[in-house]
Length: 331
Ligand code: SAM
Ligand code: SF4
Image (tube, rainbow, N blue to C red; front, side, top):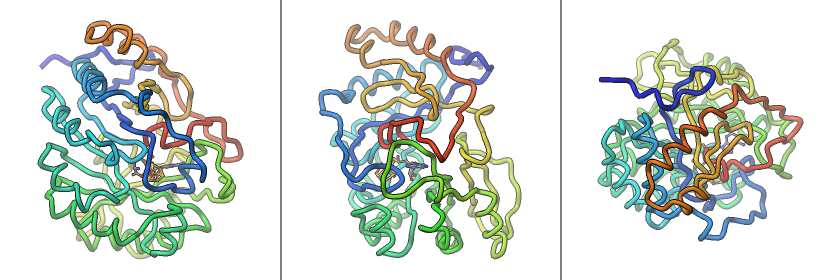
């Protein structure tokens, strides 16, 4: 099979992973992700179902092998099942995955699996109901736990949990979260908080805690075996001895992983972001709407955009240089 080299950036990195944000809206308001008072995009500014499908197809023709649907909360988009159905049958796409907060999974897990979604990441930052509510401002932990069970019952290849750990908020739950994952045969990744978007709930310089600090906590109760295994994303994984579970760390603050970056993101309004921590981007919606149905033209613009991918991000928890919130960016 010939290797498609259309999407190789100036630093020699092959882009084969697209994160597609389908909405900036959400049914939660996590304190590290959003401000309390958010203004969301008017619906006509979002890419339509057809525009999302055309763009995804163009990326896959150019060599993208994995697409993750995200947001905002992807499951609150009304046509999400049609999108999953269309994208999962794109010839050449190896894997369609999603990151969700789990709230809608009790109702939707089986339908998503049936529509062709292969893997699912579910975000859960606390196992204590009151704390879960205060971290998400409105969330009901019980609903998310039912959602996790529904995802497991639906038979996804792998269900992985994601937890953002903030010092002083939930860093005392790292062991509990890991035990919960292992006891249920799930993987879990711990994520360092990034300074994306101006928030008022806390000072991000006070809540930083590194993956290495978490790994040391975990080593007190788990035997963590180094592994080179990857799911094509930024997580660095350890196998848990005597268990099928893996524990991963996503360390954008303490361990720059840009040299192996294989990803780009498309925001819900069709802005192709070439790096999470930089503003380099191209407005694909303008191209889609100026040349409707012209896939060749879209592909030319995507190929040109990849030449603008920056070498790396520079995050400083003392300063929010990126004013875009994570729900806009697509996590
Ligand atoms: N709503 C879905 C969810 O929460 O899983 C998908 C979108 S959310 C933006 C994707 C991931 O980004 C979640 O795991 C969330 O915890 C993480 N996230 C949000 N804001 C973040 C931040 N400032 N730093 C690090 N991770 C963040
Ligand atoms: Fe919503 Fe996900 Fe952001 Fe939480 S992290 S507010 S669930 S988009």
